[in-house]
Image 1 (spheres, rainbow, N blue to C red):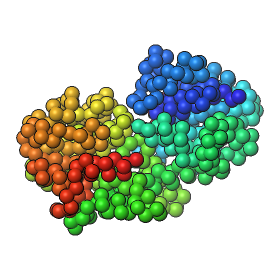
Image 2: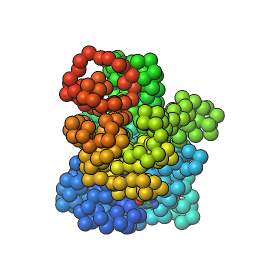
Image 3: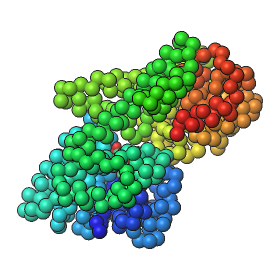
Image 4: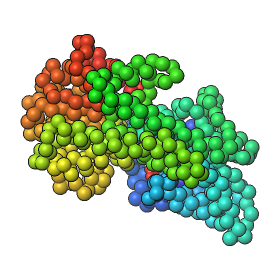
Length: 462
Ligand code: NAD
């Protein structure tokens, strides 16, 4: 049975390592961040990911899962080596491969026999071949000639539902030129293979392209409905009804058709930029994605403008902000829409009382430049007290059931900006709020009960 090292113990690496150990495999998770590995040794999970903790605990207990900073030992002992380090955007938008290169070279410096090197990080097309070249170069420097194969195995998990996504993927993509490596990968994923998960067996370049093409398409879909929603507001239409009816068409599907403040997170923003950049590099522009990036930036700024348009000058005004993480059920704030929206609002003169159930540690440094304008609150209602408006940026479940009477009492003015369309305009107006969603341009609508409306929203979010 293969022994597996996962190098890079972040959102993807830790979930990959833990879930594979839960499949009965022996895994060591490697990271060069001492603090992270120390914390894991003490049983503390460095990220917030629902369901992860008991899996880590269980597999550490059964000694199938371990953690180390010692890459040399991990490389020597394991025959399948996953690379799961970050690939953040460089200044020009292309993916910064310095961490992938560092790991590839480290692997080569410590190789002692045949290894399968599996790239799980999201990387530009052609990176698998570069990984091969970096390894070869280091082996040549050592004057040794071990066999090795490179595999591209992109990851599609979503933070917040990462465990389910990893253990129930829509597909497993494996790109390699080697039959031997392909067989070993099928063994690694044997639990999923037996469960009849579709496997896409292809070459390295195709596997790399599948990841970018998928993420960019989802980002495009979100941006499309956002632009449709903006137009709905102008023409008196309801974007949620439009999306619902569109989604009933099997060719379209209802997923990723939720109008909102623009996409964020650790993947879509950087992957769209990287794909657009690759297109330019090969003189084969992916112009739809270039436009998507532009439109998404505008969408975030538009949310701030929307508030200013309704409230007038924001100088001296206080806003209650609910939700900072880029989406619910994560503490991740990478490229969160809240960062741009709050910065824009701060430029307009606003001050903030914010509440997020989990993201404060991240928020305090990511919003460092405007921290003097922010009060971090204990709960939603503290944030509302004496605020001129309520603004929902992230749809944490607990914001779906706000005590609206209390909210109205606490707010100075009953202004309610719901950038996730959790509530319905007619019902909120009936309750006396000045309510603004995204794309809820409709003035009148058949009388729909709030709980009925919420049921629909929840079902669509699945
Ligand atoms: P992350 O920043 O959470 O984790 C990366 C980890 O790698 C960090 O712990 C860092 O300390 C470690 N690291 C960096 N250099 C190292 C080295 N030389 N040796 C050992 N460890 C090193 O990143 P992430 O969110 O897990 O993303 C990893 C990759 O997976 C990215 O390419 C990303 O695009 C892709 N991806 C992410 C998600 C997601 O939801 N986060 C989903 C699919 C794919």
